[in-house]
Image (cartoon, rainbow, N blue to C red; front, side, top):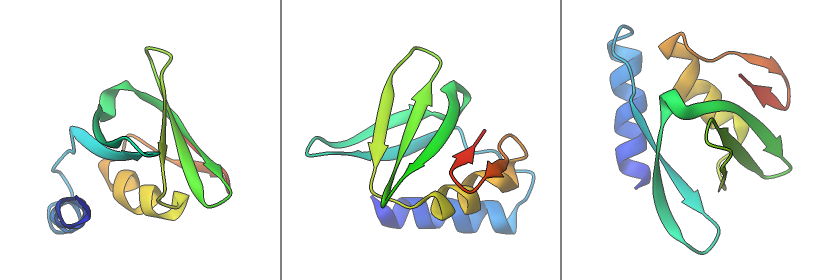
Amino acid sequence: NNNELTLSLKEIKNEPNKQLEKLYVTLTGNGKEVVNIADIIYIEADSNSVELFTKDGKKYYDWQKLKYYKELLEPTGIFLQIHRSYII
């Protein structure tokens, strides 16, 4: 849930060397699904939501804004926002 994600974000900010392994992504009408961070190729902003694209060709939707994922993932050193609409 959002509390778990907020705690994960706080842990990374407090422990910069700690790596996230999984994300909980809110899917449209389907509850939440776990996505391995290592499987994410890129994240694209889509108006008021984002789409996460994974190595296995799947696409996940979340109602969070791109800024949320930037703050969550950039401290890991794995992802970088390269455009206002993309994190790779």
